[in-house]
Length: 93
Image (cartoon, rainbow, N blue to C red; front, top):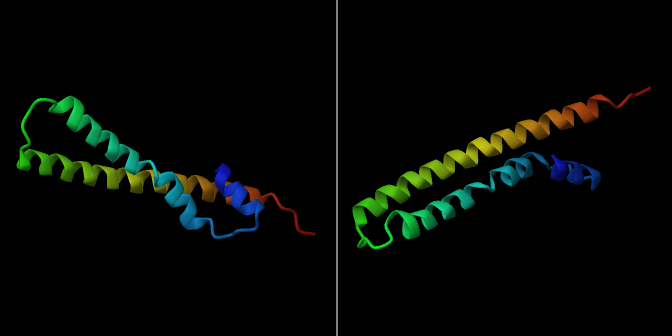
């Protein structure tokens, strides 16, 4: 919401996709942490198995995409509610 407010203060009214992408930017961190977890904690001494690795990273990619869409929607909805509230309080005489 703060970034949306700063974009509106700079008179940049293209906040729609930026609010979605800014809040959805947590998804790469989820994917990278899952990769760190796989290589360091889940299978530290195991040999490289292509099937289990591809299954793990396939499902992790799907989960990361779902986190991206969900967090992006929450960020967009909150910014949209903020913009409606802030522009609804303007009194035009």
